[in-house]
Amino acid sequence: MSNRQITAHRGQRLAGRLSVPGDKSIAHRALILGSLARETTFVRNVPDSADITATLRCLNQLGVHCERVDDAVSVAGLDGRRYKQPGEPLDCGGSATTMRLLLGAIAGRGAKTTLIGNESLCRRPMARVLEPLRLMGAESEAVGPEAFPPITIFPPERLTSITYDLPVASAQVKTALLLAGLSAPQGRTILTGLLQSRDHSERIIPRMGGSLVVTPESIVVEHSRLNGIALTIPGDISTAAFFAAGAALLPDSDITVRSVGTNHTRAGFFEALSWMGGNATIADARDTDREPFGDIAVKYAPLHGIVIHADAIPFLVDEVPLIMLLACFAQGDTVLHGTHELRVKESDRIACAVEGLTAMGAEILVAEGQVTIRGGRPLHGASLNPWGDHRMSMMFTIAAHAATGESSILDVECEDKSCPRFYDLFQQLLQ
Ligand code: S3P
Figure 1 (cartoon, protein in one colour):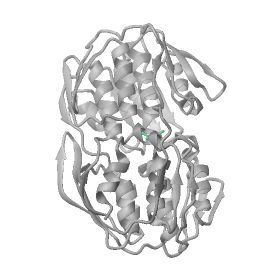
Figure 2 (figure 1 turned 90 degrees about the vertical axis):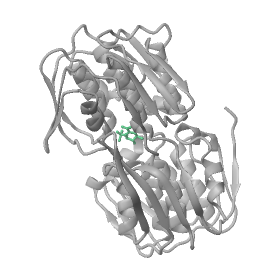
Figure 3 (figure 1 turned 30 degrees about the vertical axis):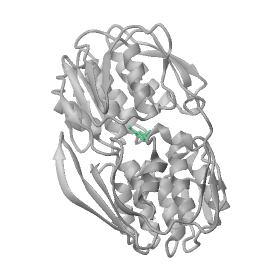
Figure 4 (figure 1 turned 90 degrees about the horizontal axis):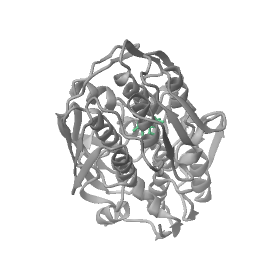
């Protein structure tokens, strides 16, 4: 992969309409659940991002026939059959969602399998998934106490259902255990604890005929034979958020991102933007395949600082760096509580954002999971390193266009992980 660098200056305004690639989280789930179903699943608007390509490649290695034609993918479900034992390790690239979800699926339906990843993925803790899977009977080998990849998983003949109290609000962990629970032949797998995170799995599993019941305190899943379905994935709200942040920061901006998923467990960024005084509205709201979507319009408006409590973080977890950027331009301080999980994403996103935004003139205080951004300090250009993290690279691109002077952003090719052609889309809006 070549190292691409961009040089950027302050932009005038953003204006126009655009579509963003399909939602990455929903795509992973549709493809992996499709592999377990008894018929073929047809998925449209599948993003051609590196993470989704990794999931498709791994499924093919597991003996699942997936065929892609433009933005449509068909997945021939294996029904009751088990995944094939792959001849080579499954390469999950930089995708923790691919690895964590597949670990859950393979624990219930696979053979001994080794999963590998790139340098960034080899720093992501897998113990949070492997420990409950071990309680269900799937042993594994990994690196160190945090269970870093490479991982080898040894699925048992029959998984045991468990009751498990989720210690971390992670939709990846929740989904891995739901996938395993769907394959445990007897009993019910009951999840309690920190369940409040994106709920795409809870929506799509019943849509495929799976037995899954959500109560305020638990999610209960049972062995199920899934049906193949046809679904169209809405645009990725986490990608839309970057363009929205650009419009929120550049005076006179007025943009609309079409057909974006607006599931409330993903929409925390837009809620926070409104609390800050931002002008964001959803038009033409529709509901398809149990996932709501609509056109999100964002206009420039002056912002003010806010406090974001820890329980709101899971609903905007991927957008925290963007909120840090908005906060630099807002009047007054912004305080974010409970940001620990940001430390174990593709990069340490708090450290990376602090490094880049501070180089641009921001004042940010970090203490024990609490981040305070001093507002009212418009940024100036700097040399920015996203540490190979797609969301940091896209955030710095927006920051560079909102700042005075010249900025350079290193290694922007990492954006391919979720939004190939991000910069082209951004340039189309830039007036
Ligand atoms: C994801 C869940 C989140 C998020 C990631 C995708 C998912 O991770 O950061 O980009 O698709 O389930 P955690 O579940 O670890 O918070």
